[in-house]
Length: 524
Ligand code: ADP
Image (cartoon, rainbow, N blue to C red; front, side):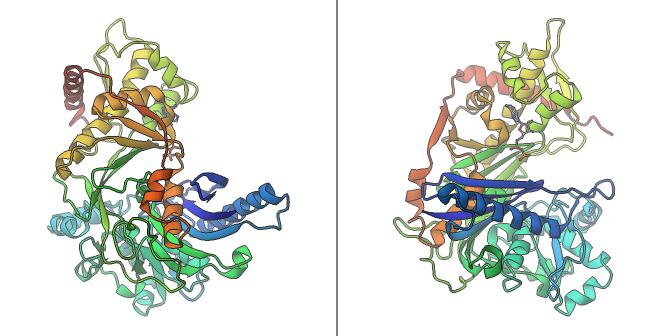
């Protein structure tokens, strides 16, 4: 039996999963690592711990598979290739000579460069940045984090200008370590989250580099998301393994959901929600402050051609990307986190799973709405001063109504985002594919189908992020033949059909918009 090893380096844990030819999980290992909060608003990771935990879970996963297939840890399974997917935007700066990071990694959640972003906005740069990168000028993205490191780590700027330092997002850092420092590369999906990458030319943008004072010498080479880019050091896993797929976590999940055609979309229900919609070879600008991003980039075409792989497994490094598949992206800040708040803040439930039965114990919310603007509102409202609002309560309101309103709030926010996306793209979306921890809540998924008016589809394999990375690597090495084979593998676990009358849906959405309006401009 042959396998593809997916390395899924997330914000709180490193995971490794072996996938078989049927796209099923054969073995899995996971390890959490430490979060550092040195100051309010700062979030850091130790890049060395990211690497050691990722290597440890990869080895553990391989060992588990060895024991499962032969009873002996020494009889290693045959791994055809490695695919990498990762927390996006997190910035690492390291010494090319020693391979050691020169500072803690600045995590995507870190807000230390918010002031710098305000300054750049004040100088009138936001529009140009948006046009070139598809991104809203925000501290979330890597560019101002890298600038901060170059300005604040003693000697870093001079050393960078002499070519002694290397920058990368987590994918680059893992590739560097896996190849023993031989390959300094990233893929176009990760590059498109840096504020430094031109979405249209698929290259680092000199004007943006100058604006953020980034010397070109620190940047990794940008490669397609699928294609053999190097081999692991033989000592790491006993024999060299080709690294053949790389994509940021949300883009990888979109690929793992087989959203290959324009208009296909997936939503991940985790702490927050991340929705991505494939827009094909067009980088569609948003009028609703959604982001435009590279979804993935094949070596020659945005999607593998029928019946063909994406490279044939050659050991030569792949060429620079020429054409990409793009996506519109939107996020909801408070999704599963709203249920955590019911559990920890209100102590209304003991575990997240309890919310379904509690909410189902009443037929409706009794006209109660919860707007979970605990941290302001994101797309399409964008109001940092909005705050959490619970409205419509009467003497008859119970905790069950509030729990139901909390679940509805997740589905209603997603419906708003879905509408904005469809308007931006000019596509009618036919269905929504779902994954993430909260998608196992059947009541929530039914509400979602009702509020969208299109079916919500839950796949059998919900490890879509790791699976997407595996698919990208497997397509490049002939493990899978092409997009049609993957489309055939993607299997429905359950389909939720909209069951709400159109008039009822419109009334519900209008009432929700009234509640959202009341939540706005509250914090001073
Ligand atoms: P993340 O990757 O963001 O940590 P996960 O995909 O692991 O998130 O999903 C966990 C989130 O899903 C938590 O916020 C939790 O409150 C929520 N959640 C888990 N189970 C349920 C459920 N049955 N119903 C609603 N929300 C749930």
